[in-house]
Image (cartoon, rainbow, N blue to C red; front, top):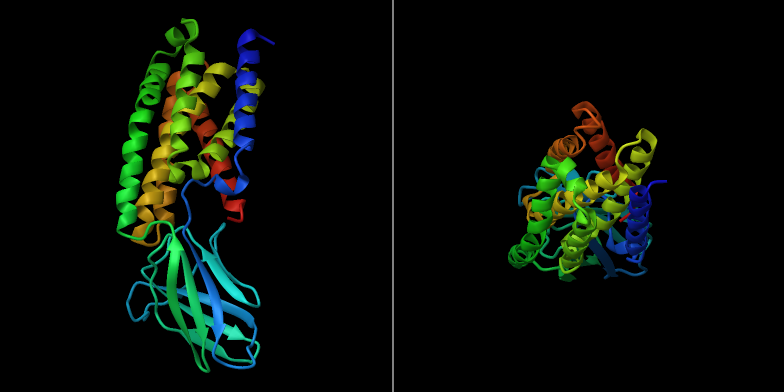
Length: 315
């Protein structure tokens, strides 16, 4: 094995070790942080019945005349135990309503309620014929303060990503010259890891970035070894381009777009843009080894794998 390949594998092993040191519940592969709702039940009736099943309805009209059940897809869901209920979504509508079936045979409907906190908590009072849902103090900043916070996160992050972005452009456009300069790859990795360390200060970026990097870099290493492509160059490009694209994607969608309602279509559209942009970067950096069609396929595999694994995660 050549010196460059040994060095690349050592870098990859070190990165994987760092990624696995982060608690698994803090990272997600499908990028954007997901808002949640937690419902705790109190009873005004005796004996208190248990919960059998339930539906969370999403509405854009204040009277919920356009109510529709929260769609299940990937980690997005609404579920109940016998004593409480919870939901997780890529995004929620502006208004919500519960319909819960209890062991006494009754299906009770709640008042229409809204959501302020990113991780919201509710008290549900079970009455004889209906439910009263009241939001309690949750976690995560409420709107509109969340917009200010994510703006601050962006101010912290963007300068940290500037140098990796410049290096990535140089690497993609002048890859052959870049490879000839001694220590350039080490410098690129050090700069990228420094920017990654800064991202630890931005919770909305940390959620998703490390697992995405781990998945895509393992696949990229396997591809390079299988197709006999330049391993060090490919891993460096994958590291830097994901650091930039995924960080900006998580910041924008985690901080802003979830407030706009159902954003799953927007997420897929953004993933499509990222696929094309990263394919162009790979095609430029590897233009002496691969054609654009192969770069397009590689980018599709990398992005589909990281996004798909995120859909399988239960959080």
